Length: 206
Image 1 (tube, rainbow, N blue to C red):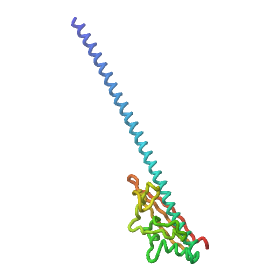
Image 2 (tube, rainbow, N blue to C red; image 1 turned 90 degrees about the vertical axis):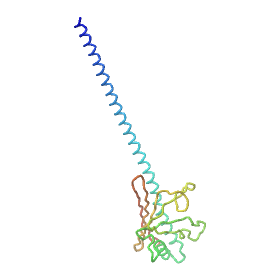
Image 3 (cartoon, rainbow, N blue to C red; image 1 turned 60 degrees about the vertical axis):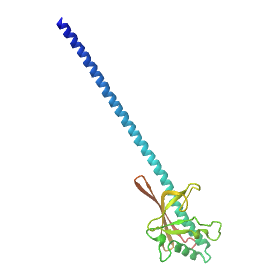
Image 4 (cartoon, rainbow, N blue to C red; image 1 turned 45 degrees about the vertical axis):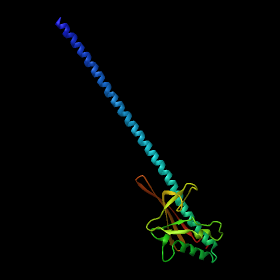
């Protein structure tokens, strides 16, 4: 009788042990599954974050490229205005253009600090060389930040919010050519970036 009771108790204990082991393995498997799922989600979030960051960088770089090219276009337009419409002749116009960007005794755009231009007060209805009236300001100690006007979609220095972009014009005069470099700087995240467009302007009528 006693042996039967002991045998039944042993079988009951074996059943309890088996259930405990089964339940233990199920919990471990659940934890592993949750860990894998969490790692997968974190990896996806990292990829999405990097994608958004790359998209924002591409957007800023495109804007900076347009602003840098705009700087070149303004300088070329100024050269054309002086050369074509100076009353004293072509050479006098070319000399006046170079004197505008690097007036003696100052170096202005020809200095290492460079310069920036402000076209806010230009009168485009004036047929007497409106581009010749453009203001050139020395970047000392640094160039002013471009402001973005949401109403007009333009970048300037008079109205709007800080765009985060800074444009600097540098000029190097060599004989009958003047090399213009237009550099745009911006900060994104923890990085500082810049893009440079350059072009040589010539006294092309000669």
